[in-house]
Length: 319
Ligand code: HEC
Ligand code: HEC
Image (cartoon, rainbow, N blue to C red):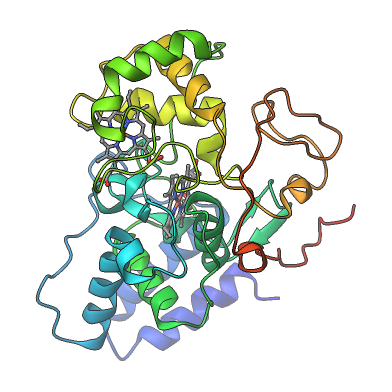
């Protein structure tokens, strides 16, 4: 194994032709220093960092790939109808092209992978994480990791992660944790009618280009959005689309309780989630050692075989 001093030596030697000895050793020192404090970076400021804009007139293969990745993210159904059969696109949840805080932003995502995910109890690459959203959030089929489309998505994510040091976190990453409240679906129903039905339809099945919230064309039972607390957070910060932030925490929970009690596409293999136990209390299906407190009746999946993403073997599995 290389010790920090050896690494500094190698880096200074390699850099000699490009710049002065002094510059090279300064840079090598700071790299070695960062390496000692896991993830720490002196110049990184999550409050001022912005993901770069995408060039809409791409003129080299890399820019074309980034641009195609963005197009697939925003027009998933039209671009990949056999993989994305629901009414949702990736940007139905990852709002503003994956840039909006508290709407599971994808900006900076490349700094977070490979990553350990407790739901599968394994360290997974970004392609697997993307396929969880294809199979769970879009109730679709997994995209081959070596396909051009997958690599275009990865290129876009890498592009909008520019400048985020490995292991660092962006502002509003994921979706903010909600205070622990209990949602009431009987209160949620009229709140839904008054605040959501005009866009998502009176029966929640979507209208025009606006995606469904339940039913056969919505996200699957295995999506994070199918959990009350996660849905409440998304709603609290992002919905109604034209008046985000206008609902209280309790109202968001009540609406979330209503929409997560509805039927939606199944996820084959969902009983294997959290293989070591410890699933969150609001997961709407039974997992190891835990009967769901809010079970729902799933709608059978047509594309069952394509909906399973096999987890990589992890050192932690089967322990
Ligand atoms: C129904 C809503 C929904 C849809 C649609 C959706 N996602 Fe997600 N996605 C989520 C949620 C929720 C998370 C988890 C965020 C967190 O870590 O808290 C997530 C996480 C991710 C992550 C990991 C982010 C991180 O910070 O670790 C990636 C990558 C991703 N999604 C890609 C996609 C892609 C590509 C598509 C389209 C094929 C898509 N998502 C569609 C809800 C959705
Ligand atoms: C003004 C129209 C409008 C209203 C009102 C509205 N939404 Fe949405 N909602 C949208 C749009 C549009 C999207 C997809 C965002 C995109 O494609 O950029 C969306 C996405 C969503 C999503 C994620 C995608 C999906 O279909 O699951 C959820 C969940 C959601 N809305 C819930 C609600 C709830 C709950 C309410 C009421 C509190 C609500 N919305 C009110 C327009 C609206």
